[in-house]
Amino acid sequence: MGATSHGVPAIRLEGITKQFGGASDAAAVAGIDLEVRDGEFFSLLGPSGSGKTTTLRMIAGFERPTSGRIFLHGEDVTDLPPFDRDVNTVFQDYALFPHMSVAENVAYGLEVRHVPSSERAVRVKDALRMVRLEGYDSRRPAQLSGGQRQRVALARALVNRPRVLLLDEPLGALDLKLREEMQIELKAIQSEVGITFIYVTHDQQEALTMSDRLAVFNRGRIEQIGAPAEVYEHPLTAFVAGFVGSSNLIAAEAAQALLGKAGRFAIRPEKIRLGEPTDKVGADEHSALGKIKTVVYLGAETRFIIALDMGGDLMVTQQNLKESSMEALSAQGRAVRLTWKRGHVLTLADDPQVAPA
Ligand code: ATP
Picture (cartoon, rainbow, N blue to C red):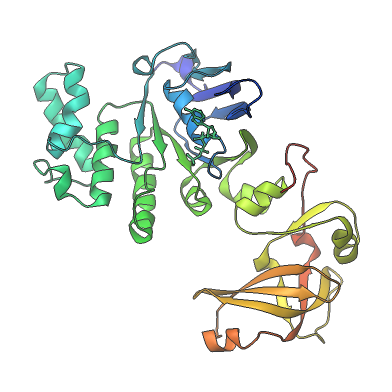
């Protein structure tokens, strides 16, 4: 690629919408603007049905937008078929050919494009090395574990050397432990190959772990785009505050009573300190009295639901530095004082797009 492509985003979506049914049906994608930088690991994060997969399929060319334009490295590809776009997709169900060996599966795309067999062999070997599957060339998919099959699917996409790789919940079928291992590996592979990854997931932990930046989807719209820490520490809307990590949402009378101001706010449960009712409250802190209503022991931490004396509940999480499960669970019913730093109160936008739950 020439110097002209420098600084041009890998993907640009301009006013993209997708309406599947008639005009009266809610749009699957309801107006999206997005820029993904070249070489980024970018996640589309959101709950089921929020429009992530439809957006990915429009970038791939499997679905046509109802309106809006799609640019890949500056070129308008909106009207191009999938095979004329410099992208490859890795699906959750792997879609491997069961009767072919690992090497044949990986080589397939090159064969279709008539890449000479000597070059094919080198590129297949290289792709299998990237996904750490050297020596597995002659195995059949049925002789592999779920994680290994996922790697073959990845190698099959990487071997084509696309500039953009689209991944739709690629780890969805794996158990938690393997999933966490693959998250770290995928990220390492992406850094190694330097290809732009667009990664669809509904798992906020996964998106926070792997992404350079992410877009949070809700009902066909993007509510926030940013780096993981930025989105977690400064959620712009109530939806983002609740979907990325957990949050106590505080609005209306509760905001007046607890925080002394009107508006919509959020406090992360891990920012609230659980203490004795007699504890002193600092000048830079807010405080409320209550009783422990529910205790959920989670191993590394404990989650408490506190019924406030003034009405309403707050969730608090504490790391289990010393407490055993017995001690944590026996806290139920205890009177407590909650305190949190004023600086940890997050101010949310009164976003009209965020429909009340
Ligand atoms: P998931 O994580 O469950 O895949 P998602 O965020 O990827 O969810 P989409 O698959 O993009 O969401 O779906 C968005 C909306 O569009 C949903 O309401 C879905 O039912 C609808 N939809 C998706 N594909 C079609 C289709 N081919 N025909 C009609 N409606 C569709």
